[in-house]
Every structure is written in structure tokens, then in C-alpha cells.
Image 1 (cartoon, rainbow, N blue to C red):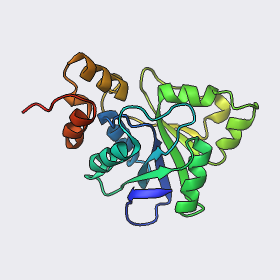
Image 2 (cartoon, rainbow, N blue to C red):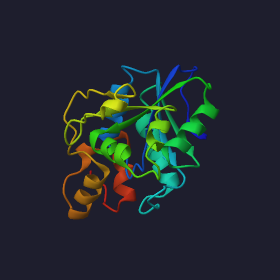
Image 3 (cartoon, rainbow, N blue to C red):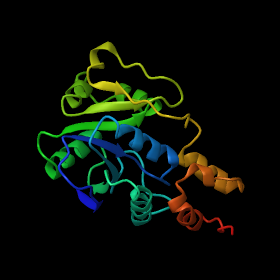
Length: 204
């Protein structure tokens, strides 16, 4: 795990927000900020390789730079890169970088939680095994998520202060492509960078 920005101290609980961040959005920041009410630190994780995607548009260095700028206002935010892109791989890299007994909680929206829990991992007990290594903090996005009963001790709700269902990196890119207003969807600190990277001329 390589850090671009690291919070001070040794957290007892670590939130992990892993994603493609193409680009980072207000929803990413809101998710991480809300998690700080329950945990000590949040690390934004940008994998160098994705299990089911590849880098298109903004490159790895561009996305890492935007994450650092977006996270700069909160001392309990870290930004790091991992070699692996699967949750189990990211969890192992986090344990190597932090204390071995740190409590790990991946942050995600309800739509992502549905995919994570119901993914075909190759054997029926695979996800239950992963939940012994980490937990999930799930925010309502595109509907409330209710975990299966057998997982409820390891999957927890994450209240968000506002409705961010329509805020996504895909929506940012689509609005830029259509020439529509997109600035309210991204942190102000990276708006100029988003404009440059996604081929829209910066407005005065």
C-alpha cells in the first residue's frame, strides 16, 4: 500500500472507501465524512488495477491527485494506492500498513452492497469468510439496503445527512459530455482539474 496522504496516529477502526474515482464526487466525500462519526479514520483507496475494469479517461496519477486535493480539508482522511482491487486484497494490504488488529470497515452505498453480497465468488461460503476479515458500512443510495440475517452482525447502516442518490462519477462525465452543469456534483477543490481532464473548458 502506497500513501499519497496519511492521517496521523494509529486508528483502532479504519474505514476503507475503495473505488475508481473517475472523478471523485461530493458523494464520495459525504460517505467518508459520515463514517467519521463511527470510526477513527477513512482511507480513500485507488487500486492500481481493477478486477473488472481498466483505466479510461483520467489516468491513475490524475485520479490520485484529485483525491488528495479533495481530502485535504479533513485531517482524518488518508489517500492510498493498492496493488490489488478486490476487497479481500485491499484488506490484506491495509492490515500490513496499519496495526494487525485494526477494525476494517469498507464504505459503500446500498447499490454497491447488493452487488458485493450477491456476487458469485466461486463457492457459497466465500463472502461469509471475507466478513470475518472486514465489515461493511452501507449508506442508503437508490434504496435502503437490508442485509441477509446471517450477515447483519457485520453489515451496518451508515446514515447520510442528505440525499445523494443522483450524485455519481458517471453523472459527472455524462453532464460534461452533454454540456450541462456538473460543478455541484464534485468538490470545489477539484472542479478546475475535472474541467481540464474531462475536456471541458473552464468557465470564468
